[in-house]
Length: 104
View 1: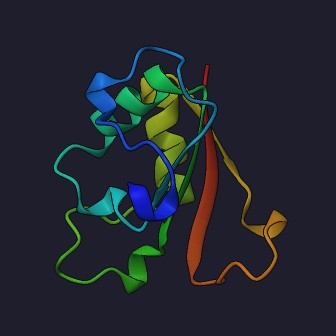
View 2: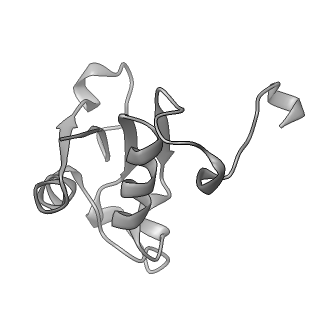
């Protein structure tokens, strides 16, 4: 991506543990299989920051209604830890969730 002076790669092309951090914002709830995407990301990076709309704001175009509690339950089932970090970010909208996801 020349405008940002950065490399853009497909997740499937990245070797394991090749990224320090991956961010996913306002898109996870639109994906067909969000858990699989989280697993693929965690293979490439030990940490993810995930942010999105609270379920009450999700409209018909969202495939899933995700929030920090739902992600915590998914993490317990699929082997990752979810920590709410919204209160640690200045000016993060209260109507959205922001979590750090790490491998167990």
